Length: 396
Ligand SMILES: Cc1cc2nc3c(=O)[nH]c(=O)nc-3n(C[C@H](O)[C@H](O)[C@H](O)COP(=O)(O)OP(=O)(O)OC[C@H]3O[C@@H](n4cnc5c(N)ncnc54)[C@H](O)[C@@H]3O)c2cc1C
Image 1 (cartoon, rainbow, N blue to C red):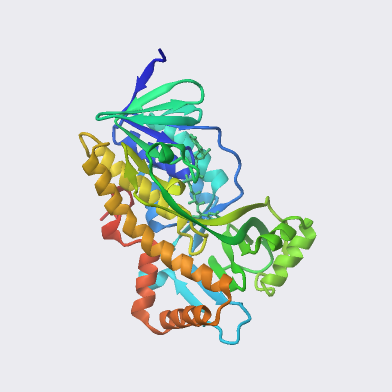
Image 2 (tube, rainbow, N blue to C red):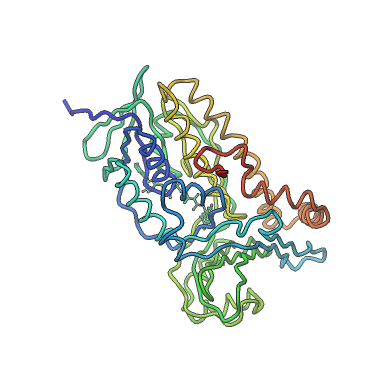
């Protein structure tokens, strides 16, 4: 019979959400194993808002080497470049309006993930390089079988094993899924004009085209468009791609050059019918997918991780039904608000229907005209302090 190794918590998936959850658990004294295949390089940069940065601070990764290689997001702009007759006004949000130096920081995943891996080892997380294959729970434990033949058992499992989560399926959790007929192309580039530490989200006819500041005169790009257009863009030479980006920017960042690595992602939506079942809590993209508008994805995933860690560390039986129910209650409202707003914004660009366009223009105009609405949006974008897990709260 295969020997079973016992832990209090198992975390499946060594993406940023799983790594953060494992570190938070281990630093709270929870015996934790992280099961993950080797990570591969990812050219994305992620705009992490102030609460996520406080989580990095809480686990000892901020400030320091990470901060030195990233750029602050001092402001955000939304620009209408749909070419419609009725255009939304340009919206500018400055962090100083809500008393912050920056809304957050833009971190390359290729820097963040190695830093989290090193911190997990220091914190005492046992990392096993393998894939989860199946799981079975009973009244007291969950047993997870890996593709190396090992079986691990624990009181609770955190499924951070991505959009095709094996542990979510094993827990019998169904998801609603939908497609956007759109891809996102990511890369980075140098430019001659100053980005002023502002991220600019330009709404085009087939999706958002977003630049996010990197240190110096460089920016990351997330370009959403129909899959056929993204396929064409992705095949361009560096020089042609630079020219195409410069044209899409109408020259606002000056001359574009020095293209970075590229990758395209299919745009999908997904939400779970319930966030936890059978001693399993869903974290990150195992629970939700939405288009990268407003930089919400990983910020939400880190809130999942930190809320789950609070509940697991504070419960005598962290896989008990009442803990699963509390987690479900905590997470579903947070997801619903953001996914609905982002989904509406994206669909209004894709559908090109006059009523949807008018609703988007009216909504953005209201935000511009009403200062309390602007402030509410900025605070919601950061996530209100009262609803935050312990690791993300402001310290006095
Ligand atoms: C183009 C783009 C731009 C984005 N920009 C932003 C942004 O600016 N700000 C923001 O907040 N969010 C952003 N996001 C969202 C963000 O990238 C995701 O929310 C985040 O990467 C999800 O992390 P994760 O750890 O949940 O999942 P993943 O990174 O997918 O990690 C899943 C992990 O599980 C592992 N795994 C898979 N199967 C198994 C198995 N069977 N057993 C064990 N392990 C397994 C995988 O190897 C991987 O390590 C963006 C997303 C996209 C597509």
